[in-house]
Length: 550
Ligand SMILES: *[C@@H]1O[C@H](CO)[C@@H](O)[C@H](O)[C@H]1NC(C)=O
Ligand SMILES: *[C@@H]1O[C@H](CO)[C@@H](O)[C@H](O)[C@H]1NC(C)=O
Ligand SMILES: *[C@@H]1O[C@H](CO)[C@@H](O)[C@H](O)[C@H]1NC(C)=O
Ligand SMILES: *[C@@H]1O[C@H](CO)[C@@H](O)[C@H](O)[C@H]1NC(C)=O
Ligand SMILES: *[C@@H]1O[C@H](CO)[C@@H](O)[C@H](O)[C@H]1NC(C)=O
Ligand SMILES: *[C@@H]1O[C@H](CO)[C@@H](O)[C@H](O)[C@H]1NC(C)=O
Ligand SMILES: *[C@@H]1O[C@H](CO)[C@@H](O)[C@H](O)[C@H]1NC(C)=O
Ligand SMILES: *[C@@H]1O[C@H](CO)[C@@H](O)[C@H](O)[C@H]1NC(C)=O
Ligand SMILES: *[C@@H]1O[C@H](CO)[C@@H](O)[C@H](O)[C@H]1NC(C)=O
Ligand SMILES: *[C@@H]1O[C@H](CO)[C@@H](O)[C@H](O)[C@H]1NC(C)=O
Ligand SMILES: *[C@@H]1O[C@H](CO)[C@@H](O)[C@H](O)[C@H]1NC(C)=O
Ligand SMILES: *[C@@H]1O[C@H](CO)[C@@H](O)[C@H](O)[C@H]1NC(C)=O
Image (cartoon, rainbow, N blue to C red):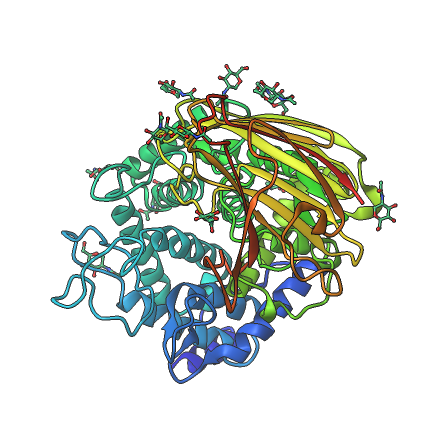
């Protein structure tokens, strides 16, 4: 049926279908696109019409929904052989499983994986972020917006209609989300899903003349801006994976919603916000280490050369893979390698984004244009967990970066209350073999005063007492250096002098892949350095590091 349709189109017999053209991809965007599609092709199951579930969590035998929707962008953009037909088939299958019962909290949401039992059945509790993921509406809904905008002419009319209907339901379902209600946490400060919902509502309102959706799209934009305007930073500050998602949502607004009369509010602001984000990130980037200096509000790793952060894929698509990564490891060996599957989507948006970012800002990402030693000051604010805006200071030098933020919060672990992802004080350094060392504070306090200056990091717990500890995750030494780190002088490449009210020698333990006293974090192993207070101390807990390269 579909090939017949294509054939009729080819003969010019179907007037409704104008010849679809692939988006223009520049060299680097095409390179990301090709590598992502080659990888996807290896794990695609053509008989299921789904990508196999790869990497996280390792899942035997099943397939995955979200990445398969990303693949439809790849197939339609590539459009070789039966690619377009396959994309139509995928869309039909995924939308068939979209939740249709408006009384369910997960109405309009998509499956996490197609084999999963029906959510809410007797054996399968609806558990938000587990058996169903509320953010999948945003991820998949915004991807379908791109499918519709870029490639609808490659799809038969009934699939075009289905895609619109699916976006509509997903957008309606997203209106059920209220931070603090029904275990949901969609506050304006949860930047990436907040922006995806805002963009989807604005687009759907515009496309389908739904003034209520348009109204809410603008209202949610205003709520986002109220936080953003504290210091022109997003609340989910400097999070290498999720700032990449926020950039995708903003670029969708910039690409498809600016060139119309009365563009939605999010579209009016999208280009400026994209520029601001890159301005900040370009100052935090250390081009020798290919890492953002800290602090990281939410991270999935301690060294961006060893996990796939979505921002690294953006850098790749804009200025080249060798700028984003310092090694030639196959991406499949990285932690979070599955995030490479978003490649086609980013590639198709890359050239639009590149036009928005000043050349002078993009140049800072390459090591030959390092802007030199500098200090960045900023603020970021993420209520309701932040009592007040956080104060960020980051010092970047060629081979050593120190970045930290002061905060006072209602819970441990930052705005997502995730102690494994929240890294408010981070040191990184370049080691003799070119690899990156890390030393990052692990969350044990809800308030911390952090002062950063060249070569120093000074952390204080205003509400702490003699039971407080300062725990740091420290990288293992590079291959060839000492395998055991039981004192600070065994750390490769970094000299550490400790001052403050703590005992100067830390308790040391190891959190490793195949053993140790504690679990690894985001697939990174580390030495656990824990500094304790002297017994019965009445001093305010404080640790002061003087750091230098060896
Ligand atoms: C959209 O939701 C309605 C219920 O409001 C349902 O009848 C319809 O089948 C859904 N469409 C899709 C594509 O899931
Ligand atoms: C309008 O949008 C709001 C919020 O998104 C939603 O709660 C409400 O049900 C919508 N109203 C109508 C009439 O669709
Ligand atoms: C939306 O309104 C415009 C202008 O009134 C009209 O041309 C268009 O067909 C409408 N679209 C939908 C989906 O109703
Ligand atoms: C909007 O249209 C103008 C003029 O055609 C073009 O230069 C610009 O790149 C477009 N903006 C986007 C985001 O597509
Ligand atoms: C806000 O950000 C600018 C840089 O964009 C910085 O110069 C300024 O110090 C910041 N303000 C505060 C209060 O942190
Ligand atoms: C940084 O490290 C590189 C490579 O080890 C070295 O060539 C360079 O001199 C160092 N720069 C500084 C400022 O320490
Ligand atoms: C951030 O700095 C401002 C101005 O110095 C101060 O009033 C505020 O308390 C600081 N915030 C935190 C969380 O330390
Ligand atoms: C570290 O910060 C605390 C709190 O701001 C301050 O009292 C102390 O003097 C600082 N230590 C050093 C060595 O600067
Ligand atoms: C944090 O903010 C709360 C609420 O304003 C305040 O009661 C508390 O004293 C603050 N804690 C610190 C350590 O500043
Ligand atoms: C020290 O702080 C801990 C954690 O807040 C608290 O449980 C404990 O009672 C405090 N100890 C003293 C002596 O204040
Ligand atoms: C680090 O070690 C301390 C003991 O020194 C332990 O209490 C703590 O749970 C460990 N933290 C992590 C993140 O492994
Ligand atoms: C700490 O205080 C307790 C209780 O007052 C006491 O028994 C203990 O000897 C003190 N320890 C030190 C090292 O002073």
